Length: 298
Image (cartoon, rainbow, N blue to C red; front, side):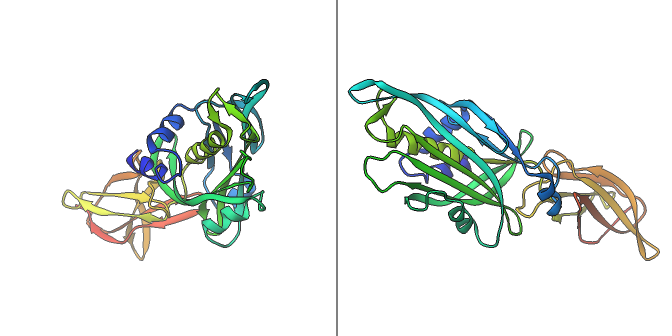
């Protein structure tokens, strides 16, 4: 949580505590899965989804596939309360296959390219497997707003990597209230309100699900009677529930002698048999990761 607060504190115009409080008390949670064809093309595990968390004052109005709208509190025109409406946030999730870094991908997914930059930078996206936080993935965000001083509209984009030349992208637009002749909740200037809610939405992005295993650590314990270690993905985040095989070198080939699955921390522990050369192999979603060879056994 401390890392999350430090990250959010980078956002202009909001304190870390205020942003985290809104995310924690959010009204709507959206899970947008990666399309199966794209996931299989990159040999990624099933269940991989982008998670969106709405600001605290917003509820789901509609969802259609990979996009939707959240509606928020009432706004009204200064001096003319009859001219009113409800604040809204439009969101969309996509998966972008292209070369480049996260800054370039975020910029490429901006819709209002004629607007001016409000702010941007790097952001750590929480990586979750179920309710378990296994790490973070470094991405980039960018916010845009019209150049006219009275305009209250904002656009925000966040991009973070999933695989080589594959990025998850979340896009937000706060278009209502449209300008600073309106106030939200009776007091908040429309532009300040919209900017804050887009920032909160960007801070509420997460990745749900395991990524493929890439590194398997293995060490002998208890005088070689057990082999223990950890399985992580390309971002060094733990891989949970991954099938683990302990293999022993025999007759020029490798023979499986024990198996288990990684824990809720990505850890495993398997017993050995007779003395010999061992390795640990993890096969998941078309990926195979192996540990170094080690001497173990009774």
